[in-house]
Length: 214
Image 1 (cartoon, rainbow, N blue to C red):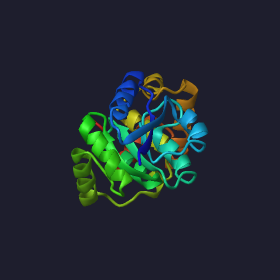
Image 2: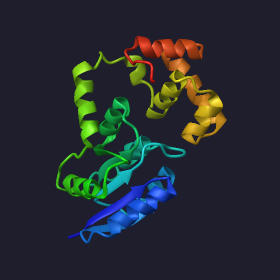
Image 3: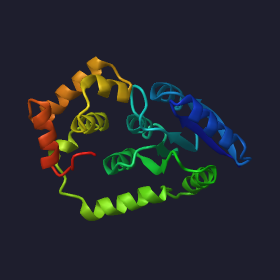
């Protein structure tokens, strides 16, 4: 019996590569590829699959938000994040909302196919470097901050970019969202952290145990 797989990936070139890889495997049935979370959210409940490969940095709703909404509707689906991010916070957030695997986009075809079979059989595949990052994060994790716990995954992304010194317009381009959306997210961050400026937000970010991103 074949493994039914769909993809959520906004990069058209990578989407074509992934489809080519999967379609060459006789044990995998490719159902559909989506360029954004919104299309996946509308269609996947009608076309459930065994495994969904999902990018994190999507235009509009990100991959973690997509999984958060889909998991209750598709409890039998295994969600595997396929991303460039090596970020412990994002990894834990993805796992918390229902992801069962986490692979870097530099994963080879053989590794990807093996991960799909593994997660379908009940495993939790991770790229080696991701697994090491998770282990190290557990060893050195600071006490949880109730204030940061209030932030959504998208708000955490914006806060990290603020900490890196990006301007509102640059954050808008980085996340493929409107300037107005960035402004709204930053106001929410300020409210939740009880600060009134970028400097105060970054300082609070550091005080709560998160090092300044390089």
